[in-house]
Image 1 (tube, rainbow, N blue to C red):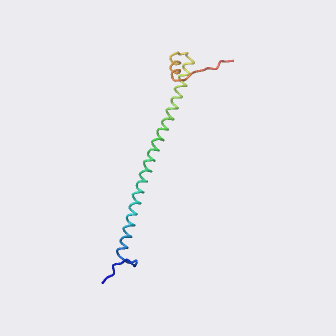
Image 2 (cartoon, one colour):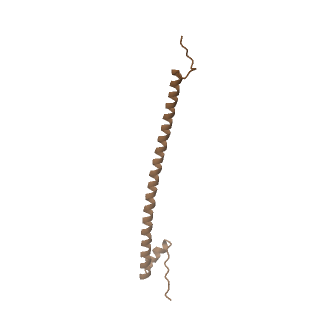
Image 3 (tube, rainbow, N blue to C red):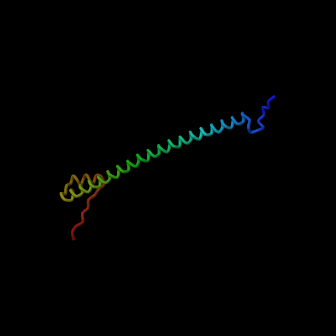
Length: 100
């Protein structure tokens, strides 16, 4: 007659259960790791897209400043009321310093 109790470490049932639990734990950890990697990649992609938007915005801002400066110079030199009205419409006022 064979002994079916699990009193020693060499029991096939006990070793099989431990192996199964370790394999299941490894699978769960793998799935969690995969999820974290995918989330990190998505965050990096979003960060890169925002970086591009900021860089584009800085270039447009520089162009806007140059355009406003050119319009202001044209308005001062030519006393053009249409340019002055356009600038005023957007909250830009041109002031000149009087010569002393």
